[in-house]
Length: 134
Image 1 (cartoon, rainbow, N blue to C red):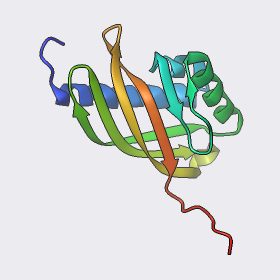
Image 2 (image 1 turned 120 degrees about the vertical axis):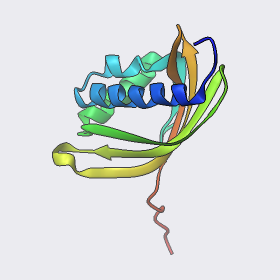
Image 3 (image 1 turned 180 degrees about the vertical axis):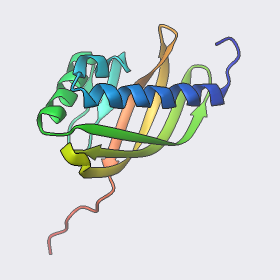
Image 4 (image 1 turned 90 degrees about the vertical axis):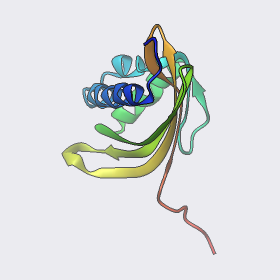
């Protein structure tokens, strides 16, 4: 991509989301983890930061083993330049029979690695308010 065009990058990101969701639905954590840079970090709700392909692979393999069968990412905003692109959006997690068990929001930082846009930093959190004890 000689000339940077944010709309082209957004199309690539949205195509990447479809492949990402498809790989997760198959339970293929190895292919799923390829959507992240080698030195990527994820920041999941209620867990410590995890970095690197092995850690990311293990986290999502664990989610699949717990019964998560589909991830749906919906892009709301993309901004940035030729080095780094930031995306915000909505995330939903589904069990079998398309039962939604998590609705939240995310911020993704995308970076090019080997001329492919990949997720470099991934943070998400849940929309459900925390329980308070009185």
